[in-house]
Length: 328
Image 1: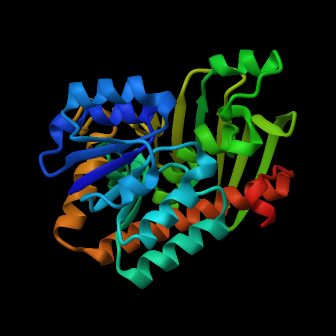
Image 2: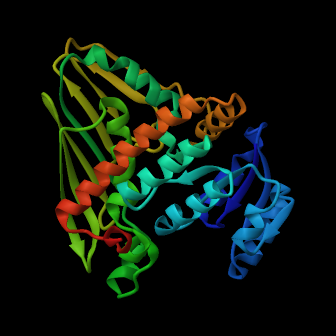
């Protein structure tokens, strides 16, 4: 894979830090604005990136075959669509798009052009997550699932002071559901599929959800997903069945070791993750899928992304949280 990155924020720095593990990925170019010149020059020097561009057209017209869209949420759709239209494969940071309509457009376009498109969502590719999926039958009939990802944001202080940075700005498709709870949605949907009913109860300040409780209803059990940027609590994920429980005390995007706690008193600690950094597995798999030209696997993963996009769109709509592109 010859990769071109659009963006220069924190997630790009995270990705570049793992590039040494990605033998089949060459980071060929990075594109950003003149404001980002210093940081991009640092990236080029530290990670051996061959090219820096200051327009997206230059990136699209160079030799890269795959574009990694690592921009604010509201820009994911536009930049991913442009990449597909220019016959580039695409990796899009979470959340895939602002809404389900945009996600459907990207899916349709990628399939028409037989191109690869992935949402960069870490938990789906982590060995611990795959092990949890395998072990679900041990728990018996699932009754209650709870995921709490509450992390006080330093940006919330600015928000309270009247400065709305992208994470708390509806113009940038921000908010707790799109930032933190989206990981919980992926976690749940990857284990149990599309829910039968969706309800969202957010704390809304100045038109954006600073925290909220998402209820996903399935036949026979309920899931409670908490995402908060205005308060914090111990991270806790519990999958509770009538024979036992899986407990995990790390965020659903990290998915570190977990405990299997059975009703008969048996317990087991499990940690199958093979890399310290959460992002390695997903990019290894993206590269492998593209290299083997496995469009079927890619589009199977895309179906999961579409369900998650539909869930978050319904949740926002029901709770009255609207973003500019929702009205198009």
